[in-house]
Image 1 (cartoon, helix red, strand yellow):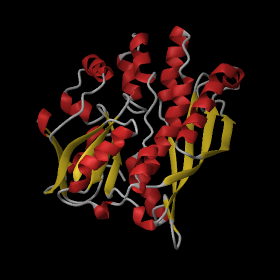
Image 2 (cartoon, helix red, strand yellow):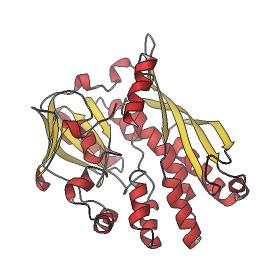
Image 3 (cartoon, one colour):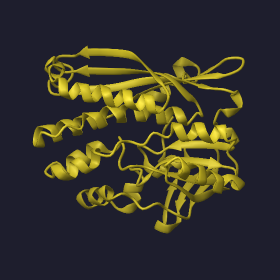
Image 4 (spheres, one colour):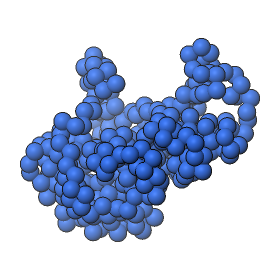
Length: 322
C-alpha cells in the first residue's frame, strides 16, 4: 500500500493535504477506519451487543487526529459509507448509532458535519459488511502554527498522551486471535478513541511551542520517528498499557518488540516540544482531562527509536510510510 501512496503523491506533484493561502493554510484529510466495523459486526452476531456508536466515533477520531498533526483546527467533516447490501440500512438501530457517534465526535472537536456519501456496492463488498471512511478540512492560522519536521530539534522533549486502548488499529489481528472470546473482543472496542484536537487547540492558544507531533496508529511506536530528519528518539519512561494489550500479546505470541512496533500500547499521540515547556505541556494536558507523560527526548544521531525500559530499538528503515 505504501508504494501506491508514494506513486500517487508523485503523480499529483505536491502534498495534496496542505493548501497555502496568503494568511493561512487549509489542510484536507481523507482517512478510513479500517476493519473496526467488522469487529462490531462480529460482536453483534455473537452477542447481540451493539458497538456501532464506537465505530462511528472512531471513524471521525482517526480523521481528526491525523488533522491535529498539522496543528490545524477542524472546520468541516464528511462521512462515507458503502454497504454490501441494502439490508444494512434496514437496521435503523445500528446505523443511527453509527451516525450519532460520528456526529458527536465532530462536535467535540468543534467541526461541522456537512453530509457525505452513501453507497450500496453489491458484488464488491460482502453482503453483511460495510466500508467506512471520511474527510475533514481544517485551518492553520496564523501560518506559524503549522507543525512540520523542520522545527524538530535535538533536545526537544517527547510528551506521550494516553490512549483509551487499541483505538482503531490492529483490529484484523485481534479478530483473528480472539475470535472465540467475545467478551475480550468487547474490551477492544468499548472505549472510544481519544480525540486530541481540543488539547492541540488549547496548547496553541497558550503559546506552547510545539515543534512536531505524531499520531500513534499502525506501525506503533515506530511512528515516533515519522519525521525524515536524522534524529534518535530516546524514551526513558513508558505509560502502563491497558489490559487489552496483554490479552492480545498472550493470544498472538507477540514479543514486546513486535507489539510495540504495531500497537499504540497506551500512548495514542506524541508531542515534541521545546525542553523548557515539557512540564507546562503536561500540566495543561492534565487540566483538560488528558493523561500526559514527559517520556523522553530527541537527540542527534541515526534515525531510530530507543525504548530504554524495554531494551527495544527500531531502526529508521523499519518504518516505511509516505
